[in-house]
Length: 318
Image (cartoon, rainbow, N blue to C red; front, top):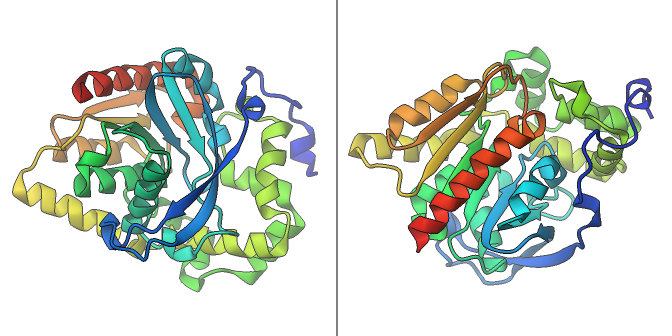
């Protein structure tokens, strides 16, 4: 374990029930290109999921760089009146890389997950790449969702401002990167999180995330997927559908809430402002002083935002 990890507390400052929730395994079916349901019908992959609470469904999808564990601070307030679902919706070791080749493919994966869970128009809360998948899914299949909350989704490869990410993305999956991550899985897990507020970190979380880097095949698969998210082609399908919606002057088809950290360099509020201007009926909320993942660094505030969105979703569906 790295020296930095050793300085962290064993458990997070705030207790959470994530690891106490039973896991179950889902088998996702192919939906076909664009989520049309015209695939071969065979199982694509298995996904593990947890859930807590009863009531209207709230589907919490983490970005590809992290885990559903990142929603731990939202579970208690959400589960009081809602059913919170927390799938680990993409596993590079078990799933085809084409499932995350671009935002349209991610949208298909999200749609397959909603069908596998038998959800009726849930509120989707998507962080980072999952938020982009939610945007694409809502614009292409609005009947699948009752509402959408986007948490810190970048509309472009912002990591490319750093030369290392440019090199990794341009060179494709780096064997050297994968090998280094495998040799130092705790450091790799810390790099993937990169929370601006170190007070939210714990050894429990780092150990959980380091499992994804603990074998060389896993590290290679994960590095390949993460590199894909840092090329312009990954964002192209969403760019196209946003331009089409702008040209047609169409409103966003479901309630849309955009949540950004005021000082987040990876997903700056300007990206939320662009979406808010494209869809004037949407709600843009900016967490003051927040420099990282809002749902991790401002969980109580973020939970109130999501509960409010869930109530609107429930009333609109009824």
